[in-house]
Length: 265
Image (cartoon, rainbow, N blue to C red; front, side):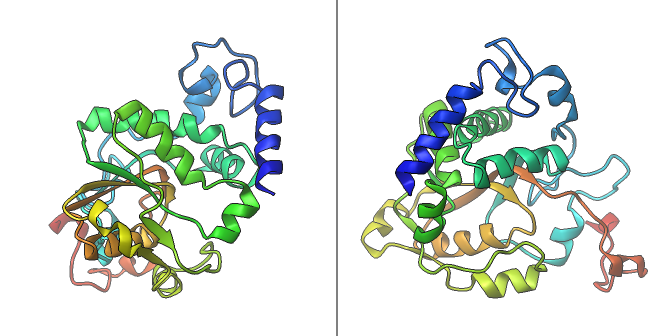
């Protein structure tokens, strides 16, 4: 199955080369186009260029008066800081789905380029890059781990070694789409582990933990917890895209049910 998937990936890249065709709409472009995107598609993507949540890195609206997003007001995270390139929307969804479900593995390398530019802008550094793992059965089905491709691309640009062996997914879980944060936490409990024979490669290290998307942060937290337990000194979570800063319904109450307002943060 993996060989077939890789062959399909090579075929798609040969049929629609990312250096000749826009990776989003398929229109003809020149090889020097940034991220292999045409002008229209670059404008349509929701680039994070302004204020961000000081914890998870989601984009904050200009009218939002706090420094912490609504989500992080209501739950803590196990990673030290998060950063994303894009806010998840229709066009971002199409690109990420192309990588995860449509065999367009070459997109992962371009996503790695985007994340490298983001960490360069923030002047971030680490000792090792670790991708969020998928279960063996899912990796066999897709032919690759999409986060692993992104991590390898980022590694080449940043000159930081990538390690796809130390953090493993020990059991397959149901898909998280449609689940609320607490349900996601329950599903992911005990799903990840650091291999006992590789704890020395994690202990005392500053880690870039890489994935394609962050929604609630439950997956990043589950991975960060086991990395911390193995002795990691810092975990920075990097993703191509993150969800928007949506106001929860219960925050229509004066204190949002928490006793804290965003302005106080």
